[in-house]
Structure formats: C-alpha cells, structure tokens
Image (cartoon, rainbow, N blue to C red; front, top):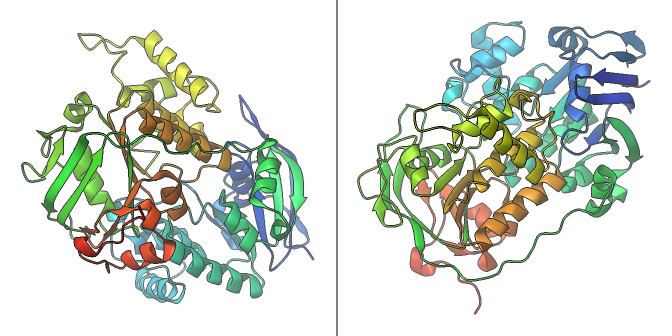
Length: 506
C-alpha cells in the first residue's frame, strides 16, 4: 500500500498556476525527490500535502484512505511533518520553546528540552535548547527545524532544501539519519537543488516544470547534466573562466577583536583579511562560528569595531554606518532573504529603496515611476519570475527573490560586494546565473567577499579561501592548494601558522 498518493492536484494563484494536475506516489520507506526550477511548484505542492495550502482541485490519499488536510496540525496528527525552506520560528523564543509549540505541546517543556538534547546528539545535529532563536545563525535554525520534525516521529517527512546551510560533514550525518528513518518505514519527500545529493540519497525522482510533472526517473541512473535538462528543458549555463590579475587593496581588516553582543554569540579574535580589486575571496566554516558577528562588523550593522580595524580604500570605516559605507562603494547581501534582504509585505519596487536611492528626490520625495523602472530592469536583467514590479516580496519563490536581491546590489556597480550564502535554496540554473554574475563583477574590477557553507560553490568562485572557526580566521589559502579534506580539517580550528600555509604550485 502506498503511503501517499496525489491525484490531479491543481492550485491557481492570481498570476500563476503553481500546480497543474500533479500526480505523485510515495511508498513507505522511500526517499522520493521532487526536483524543479525555482517557481516550478514544488513548495506549493508540499504545502498542499502539509495542509498549509488548500488545492483548487485534486485528491489526496493517505495510507489508502482519501483525506482532506485542512491544517498543519491535522497533518501532524496524521503523521506528516515538514521542514520549510524559510524557517517558521519565533525569534524571541528559545529553540526548545519553538520545538514545543511545533509539537502541539504534547508533553511538558522540560521533557521537550531533554528530548531535544537526546535527538540532536543522536543525529549529529547540535542544538542548544535554551538559546533564543534570534541569536542563532541560519544553519543553526535549520537544525532546530529538523530536530522539531524528528521529534514528531513522522510517517512522512517533507524536507524543503534541508542541507542548503549545512556543512558537508553535517550533510553526511543527516543522510545517515534519513536512511535510518527510511529503513524504519518512514517515507521522505526531499526537495533539493543539489543534484549530487539527490543522486546519492534518493530512490525515485519526480520532476516538475511550470507546475506540471514532466518526468519520473531513478536518480541513481542519471547524471547531473541529464537531471538539469529535465528541470530546465535546456543545457545549464557554464561558468566562464577567471581572467585578469588582482589590483589594489580595497578592503583591509587588521586585528579585529570584538566581544560578543549576547551570551550566545561568538567573540571575534584578531581577525585579519584583505580583498583586492578584481578578486573573489571566500570564507568557509560551520555556521555559528562567528560568521554573523564578522558580517555585522563588515556591513556596519555593528559599529563597535575598534578604530582602524576595518579600512575601505584606506579610509577607516570601522565605526561607519552601512549608508556611509555604501557611499564609498560597498554593497552587502545578507544571508536572510526575508526580513533582512527584503521586507516581506512590500512590493519589489518598494524593496529597491532599501539600498538604492536613485529614486529618492533631494527633499526625500519618492519618485515611484523610477522605483518601478528600476525594479522592472532588475526583473528583466536577472530573469526573475514574478508578477511584475508590484509583486509582494514574500510571494516569490526563494530562488527568484534571491536573484532579485543579488541583482539589486550587483546592478549598483559596487566597488566591494560582501555576500553571504549567495545561492542558498536556488536551483541549478539560477545558481549558475548568480555565480556567473559574481564572476563578471570580479572581472570588471570589483572586489568580492563571499561567505558560504557550500564548499563546491567556494571552489568554483574563489581565488583565495579563509576558514572561520570559533571566532578566529585562518590564513589565506590559494584555491589551487585547497581540498575538501584540508578545509574540513581547518573548520575544526586546526590550521598552521601563516608561514606554513600551503601555496599553489607556480
């Protein structure tokens, strides 16, 4: 008997048909991938299964019985649990309190705290149940979501981009957990844009394009290229090679020491790095090791840095505001799309005003025609799938919103771009487009600093790499000398002194 069967699921929104007669079958113990570009309808389909969205047509059969799931609470009662790509956590509550709410308060908070510690340790997903969520990095929040789902002991577990902010080591541990769950009879619906993951983990794959099923395959028998063709209907854009040599120093950080702002933060200890014009420098590391604190200091969100510790074109900006740094040519893309990179309830046109002031008159009057024109040009240039310039930010798929935010900053012709998690939750085609845009920006002479937890991405983009661990930054490593094994070792904080750092062959 099938665990889940969807028959003719259709969901129409005002400007797009997200699902168009979708059929899907999932068996007990099966890890079933749902693959497609951003905006293909994957997340909508998962929300239908989880009761967060009502379909306009179609039927759902659960364990041989037709059901109508009216809410996530009802879905959890049936044995369906979901981990969203965009987190559903309350920032002001602790991790344990968020997990407790997600369990419909079946036990006491004290019991949930104990269970959280047990499950997080057993599955290699470290979570401190007493930490407030607002102090957690994106990767740590992802762990909270996954642990909450595992505590429900689901019959069907839906995972929407579960590894997008996990390190390779954490991904391997998660895969062990998922395979164990599948062996115990749990069915798993797995959404990811990482084709290697799907090929190594999943038993079956359903491909969506434009809201319709366009193929079903055994992913272990496919290549990355063939899966990408099924998704997009075309060949994936190949990245251009690096060209040119780095120019003058743009960003210089020296002996940056910064005490943590909250009890659960990380103190920065003697951070030193530099980025030159025409090069991409990457920062790798396990989430929660000081990335947030370093990004806040570099962006100007935390102006407590010691005078002289951060210089932009030789000018001391350690205590300058984000606006002052933008005037000097620095632009910034945060890791959180909704809430920091964009204001969820505002239109795309209005969201251009967060960092672009071309449409603001001398007396502060907004020139709405110019904001719409700017948003329209970004939508066209970066091929953002949206219902026009007045589309609300939260209605876009994660990948399309990311393309808009990254495009907004690249289009400003920055002299220094600092970007965190550039392709988190972005499909293969969009990821290649964003990476190509970053390489083109570098080739035009811009200095680029990339924070990412995807090593493959850093290896593809960067000229040099650092690793951050426990608030310390490793020496710079030429990309030609970097290996996954070496970077993995450095992630634990074990790196040599500067003079012992491996160098690329001449």
